[in-house]
Length: 252
Image 1 (cartoon, rainbow, N blue to C red):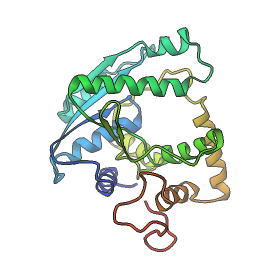
Image 2 (image 1 turned 135 degrees about the horizontal axis):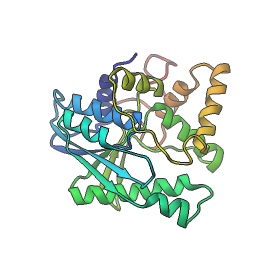
Image 3 (image 1 turned 30 degrees about the vertical axis):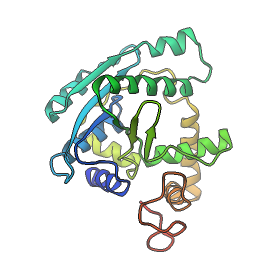
Image 4 (image 1 turned 30 degrees about the horizontal axis):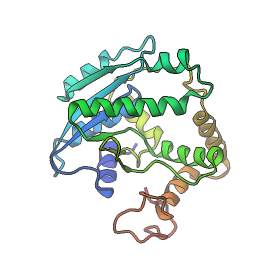
């Protein structure tokens, strides 16, 4: 199993995600990815050469049965301030709007609410828990459903809000994140979203899993191609585009 903390550090270093004096909010949904990122950054903070501060921010959508007390307790043990922002997003999306394809609207509204929370806190950098699998799935979602070759970027400056989004977990595979969270006994809050496991992203995840049985390491190769091509914002600083270190091996 990969050392997640080391993987997070390497990704942060490669893309210059953390600067001295940064105040970083970690968007913590309660899932294994965001909780693992919070834990890794909290541990990295102790010895990283560029000092930075952390705050954990959870956006409650108003879904029934979701208790974030374990996340608050984890933050207390890590010495990280915790902010829980209550919203009515679930009611708006599922009851008032009755969206047939709610995931896109949900993502947009959650992003806006998170940015509002960061503005209130005076924080301008947001760490999100997207990993390698998320990036590859987003790439294929954009291709198959949008006809575009694109993906979210490792570092994204949102000009409207003044918030810079960073994704330090991008070099980690989902299976390694899950194994790390289980090994460290990190608390995970199960989502009660009615779309959980029934979205277009889940369809793409299952498709990639089938393809990987015929084309091994498809996800790693796709991820490497995204850096080598590169997609906008994905070029590794100091690396010549079109060439991967070590020949044809994917960059991880």
